[in-house]
Length: 443
Image 1 (cartoon, helix red, strand yellow):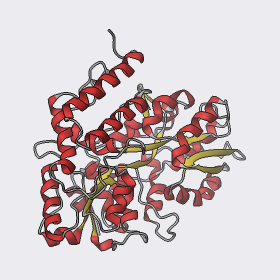
Image 2: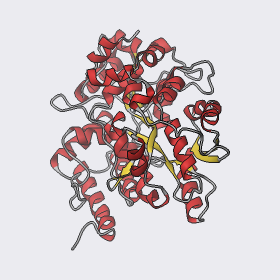
Image 3: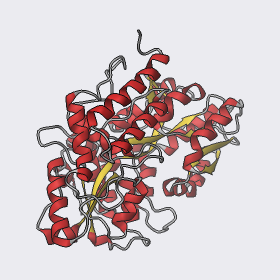
Image 4: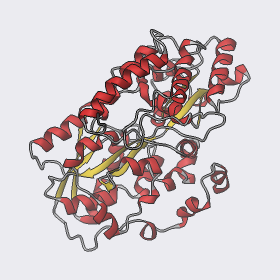
């Protein structure tokens, strides 16, 4: 069992663990007294996820507390952005609350209701979320969402294979190379599954960003007027990211074309000793469709450079109120209810139904909750370590175009077809044109 002393050893501090002792009304915004919106019905648009199905099972609690009926409508994740946009452009008020991915925010903000006045009025503490999740819910200094779903990255590894090779889980990028090589040499299983392929939501950028930020490099200057991913530190970081495949040859076969799901399946089918990916994948690697037994799968925080601070990319999916909603006050009552730590902790602890069993939490108190960690084998406390220093992708309306350009270039560089510097310089020229058209650059 994970106890409070063990949680402190993860470096999270006494102040955060003290939150466990607070009553809900002491720490978090309360529902409006007297059920002033009883009889209202609100509609929520969101992608399929077992976390949301777990919430849906508990919507009766919300209706009992408020008199408001909440209805969940699911669409495939790949269609969410287009669905939100289509409804908004049509001027539709069909959905009162929508779930969006943080990087979509700038292009959707016109259709979302700012929440700062409501947050201040009801005393909702945004400091209860990790920094990256707070950032993902904000645009231009305004808060548009509450981060209900979020994903830190983690390193997953085969305990049995690392033990057979006599190595420990890697803590640094150099150790990723040595551990992968040692396992591969000893067991014959490829050291690590990577995903350098294109065409599935720019997933090949996700790990690249960790290398880039870890070296002190970045994509752009703060005002986007300068490109930084062509600087020496960025070139070195990119080369290290690609060299797992090109130089050290410790990646699973197919990694040059893999997208995220391919890499996960590679490890799940016993064809790789490690994979670095979002934390929700733990349920895939230990689930019924995996060839692995749960006791074979270990997890650790994302690696870092030996001389650097921890940094990784974190993704969140906030809930937001549609600016077109005619039920904004009832929708806000739902937002307060669905964001309560008790609810996400209850959902993360309940394993009674495979269809609704989920690990996702987004609040620091939940990451550190002893019961949540006990039920989930300590996963959440380790995930909290991966969130230290975590960052998000640029909040730009033009990011989808920029990301596609970078995605294509990383995929091309993974084939070894051209030097890293030449490739990044070429991508920088294309992106410069995008940012000039958008007005970020002059001349």
